[in-house]
Length: 426
Image (cartoon, rainbow, N blue to C red):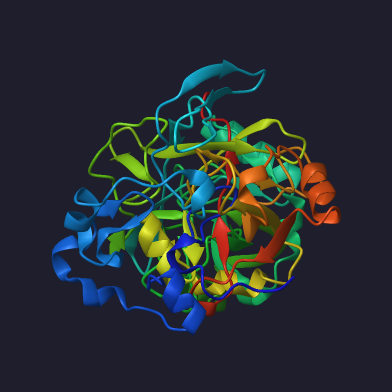
């Protein structure tokens, strides 16, 4: 697929995640092959979201948005993303509430309950003797998916494709099978990590799995770092057993920092993707509440997903998630699955201001993975856009020459988003 270099801040995250770049490029500049640095628009708009992008990315900032002239009719200009679709008349659908507007802004489709809270159990572990709080969403093997589901009372999805992830895209986590009793996955002390998001070049939410077992005759103690584990192995106190299973364990709090928490915690169908994906971290109850976004699976059924991390840094910063350069190692790997987002056509509750995106896999499918490789779809004639709901729809309209499908390349970089599909109502 032909790569796109100039979508700038319009490229987003998987199934539905906003992959915005660090620079905004106007249509005129795109034709000239020139970008406009976001820093040239002033610091007073830094961190503020204007529709589908940061106000600092727009010439004139927030004031320019307020003074903007009314838009001409949709039939006379190219459609542009808007994170807040205009009001319209309701229409009923089996899987969604859609909206049709006959005003100047054209057709609008808006999913009901497009953004809902998802409260997920927190786990406690260690990195270099410091505390780490994290979640577990996916596992590459059924036994561990079931074990962790039972332990945390919240469903872990089976994602067999994660077992194909290259070593360079993984970090390492140590799980204790005996020793000091605790809240670890196997009922003993908490897990030990080898990196956190502060170690940008090595951190990955995808972790290889190593069992730590105290040998007979040894006196168990709580080990809080990889070095302590290595020393215990060297002295004959523990035995290490690497497993082939890969677990998705995004870190929420680590010794050097934590994920961003949204300032505006009120969720609605028009809640923007920027400004963070978490509304609350509760260490007393050991829970974290994410924004769960609604979209479509390959067969047109509704799905919900959260966003925990992404690469490159531009989209990650815009969404308020962890930047994970190691995820770029998945761009040509089967551990990442295609997710299609729309950059024009029918306006709606999708992350780029148009219809919701479509994923090539969903929980329960053999090709499900929480790691998404983003492609963008644009209608050659947006005024004749139709609603697409399945991957078969995408294939059909591609074969008819009605749409272009291209690999997203924000910041001229490989774009992967960790976007676990979940059930927010469990």
